[in-house]
Length: 250
Image (cartoon, rainbow, N blue to C red; front, top):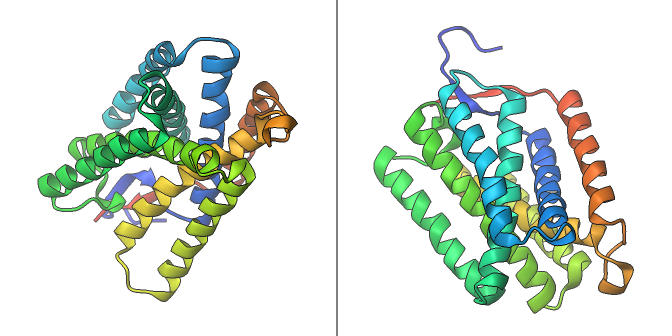
């Protein structure tokens, strides 16, 4: 436990448990968004509107609260990854710019958000996320990164010809390299964190598609509804079993 003089961030400590829940959440964002936009024929544009409303409410609530609340934090993450999936599909498919074009636009957005955040506050470390301005940049960057990750996952699986299992293996391998870099190199921990945060999204996107797509399309054929329910249960179990503590602010 931190003593009462320690300032706490309003985001969780980054542990292995954090990454487990993050990957589960990004996978759920893929299956959940596709369930509504595709299976229930809501469409991508309406899906963006529907998913963006709870995201806006949760972000405002997250910024307004004075301390870290695990359920609120992860609900906001889930809202951002679901909205990000619908937004990426709208960019890639409805606007007709393709996966590569969508990924390029969204990568520019993520890098731009990080640059403005660093220019404004001097750091983009998650340990600095304890005030409204830093939190606003944090959630903007997260939402953009979730959207970018969806486009990257689709690009690798479809245009890249890797398929869903191959795409998952690619992004899982890249994450493993980042873990190795964390332990064996002096590369900035802030850079490694954001690289990992972005890469967990295409990993979740490809795993989600692998779970719910039909066998004929290279998936396991569980269906979006069943995969979504299983992922909800797994996230609930993970939140119950894995300790959730606020990180120390710097």
